[in-house]
Amino acid sequence: MAQRPEPLGYDARGSESRDDSDKMQKPLICLVLGATLAAGCAGREEAPQYRDSRLSDLPFVYRMTVQQGNIVTEEMIDRLELGMTKNQVLYLLGTPVLTDIFHTNRWDYTYTIRRGHQDMETKRLTLFFEADALARITGDIQPNPQRAATREPSEMIVSVPDWEDNRGFFSRTLSRVGLEPAR
Image 1: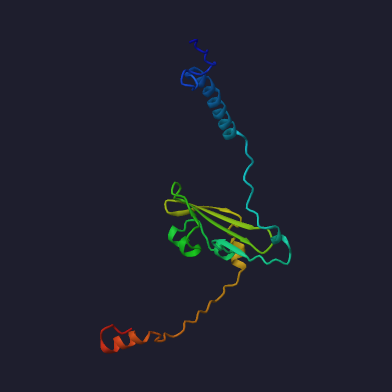
Image 2 (image 1 turned 90 degrees about the horizontal axis):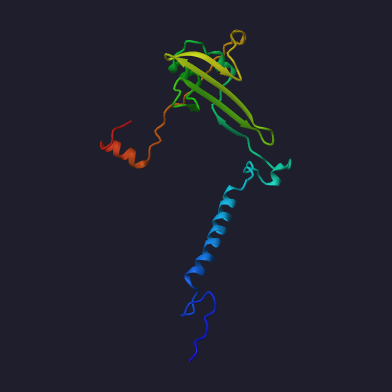
């Protein structure tokens, strides 16, 4: 009996021969890798800034005022003097928003406010210390001794309410029995 010739690219079992499958896999792998690299390296636009809905631009839509950072007034800045210690500045201005661990002698006070539909206002104040003493002041507002001299001293009156015994029933009972110290 005469043998039939095998079709090209198939072995006796009817499956593709290794040589032909390797020839098909290599271009396919190269094509997939090339497409992946091209997609990964393709230029991409910058991500757009956060944008509210289009309705928020309408004048009748309420937008609340947002304040962030340290509120630093001109009066507080006018009280700053070169040579003040870090503790004195902390008492006067409060804890700075930004303290850099690599530049411990630099304190940044930043304040931002956005009122409704208006643009955001930003105020910055940077203090530099040398040997625990205030050495330099930079920022949007500078200390002005003339402005401080013309300002009238203001007296602040703070009224502190008397303490009222607002403890609960059990706390009052336990203190009467002597199990809880009286306040």
